[in-house]
Length: 404
Image (cartoon, rainbow, N blue to C red; front, side, top):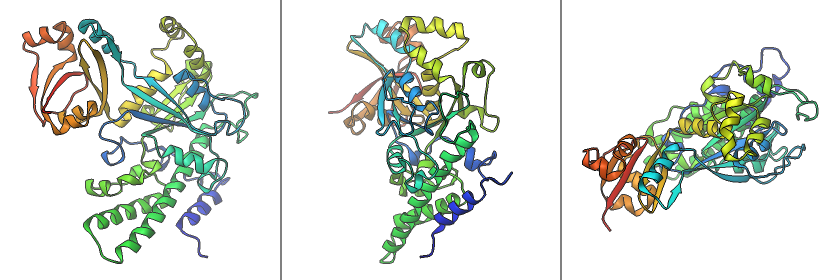
């Protein structure tokens, strides 16, 4: 049987290993480092952020998960110890909520949340079913963004699966496996799409075919799906495909304390998509009482915990913002995508609110604080009445008027 394009691509890339200067993924080329901001076609309009933590075995992935979620998982020094994904839901740090609760005398304070998913380790060949490849690929499709943990620290007691410490090599292995998996998915979709269209073509089918053909070309060249330029309609036509390399990507570089203090970074990775962290240190911070965390961070010369850094970077990468509601019952934070209009923001609270939307009563957070609450802000003329075309801003304190 004649091998398909996927087989040729695998043979081409793997055949170049060990040849100095010939590995197409060890460079600053886009397919290795591209991350991009999430396109509308690949993420939900509004969401509870779900971040998948991935990495090769023994790079500190599960330890990071345990640290940032304060949830114990099996972190034994053994490949594939995390066979099923562990999910931890954590609060998004937002100092504004405490002030709103105080001013409104709210009975409850409800932060926005992020779900961190610890996904079982993978190895070279995961896209072909090696290791726990198939399980890994199915679990990672469910997340909104991917955090790749790569190892820069040295410790002879913790054996790296490849036998060497090389963060760029870790990145190559993971990203190439994701590209392989996406290429296989697109190849199958193309075959099905062409068969279906033999009996007649619709506009939607033509759009899907055009999008898949563009994706096939780019993936075959060893580049991620996020590099493909699609029209808005093409984007919509393949929205359900959920390609792995279309997802926004961050790198956590696991370093030791001396490397952290020295400001270690991977030169070939853009600064905005890498977070150097000492995962061992984060684990220590997670075990401290909340009241002691600030002093501990100050002593270490750190501004925020690893969790805060991950959430902040993830929000930026996905283009997410927060709007707020506040009253006697509760003060609450809600996550939406930047550019969301008022009716769609209202639907985050209840899906019926979008259809019955009348108007939004909006006060900026700063004006809410200066007015010591809604009444004071309204008396100062700081409450605005906004309609269906209003684009929500980060920190808007809102009350939605809807018909029932």
